[in-house]
Image (cartoon, helix red, strand yellow):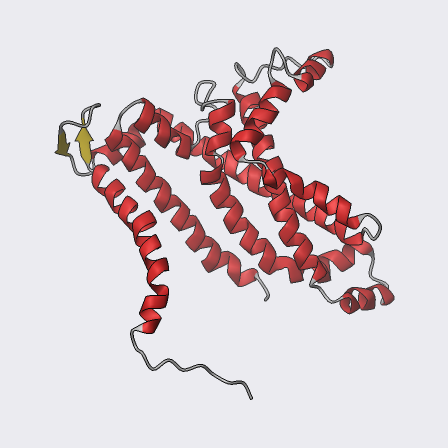
Length: 293
């Protein structure tokens, strides 16, 4: 029989959760409410005068071709980063789960990229693929590829997608490896004895048991692609060329801090917040139904 701790002080539970509630209010609800208020204002570049314009900023956003282009770029970029990082992370985790000798070294080498900050990762790949100084860029030119991501929008989007995927793979790898190691070996061995092949064992036994981990990673990878890739975009392309890599979170920065259009930037941040909340709700409401815990 387990012993339960009872607290007679009714105020104690509220005191215990007060720090977390305070952090949530200060760092989420308060900035979100300020952004919503500013999204309905029109300010001059110096912030000295403002007037209430209601939803005009939102109307102007969805009439802007540049903003609609950012929607498309963000959708392609976030989907590519999530899909490739999940697939590669799962493949590496499956291979690492089979390694017996030097397994610790193998796992450590795969985890290292996660210790690199996003901005540093962008600079590292920038040196490798710089059109004039990059070693890999030189190799691509030797193979006949006209590489210049500063002028080619598709190359720029492909480059930042590779960087974000490379930076995200270790995170997915860790969770997939932990999920694989928690699966009872007896289930896989029983299927092997019954004659199930390698692919059949993975698809019918291993992958369904990994679905909770996969579902969690889908959610956090989408949020990562929407927000945490800002530093990569800023270091490598600054949203260019011609807006080819100008994802929504970077456009918020560019319009607000560089263009000094505070009202439009605040409106964009509100739209981005609604999109991320909507995606999370859809994933938990519909995708989770297919997950077997």
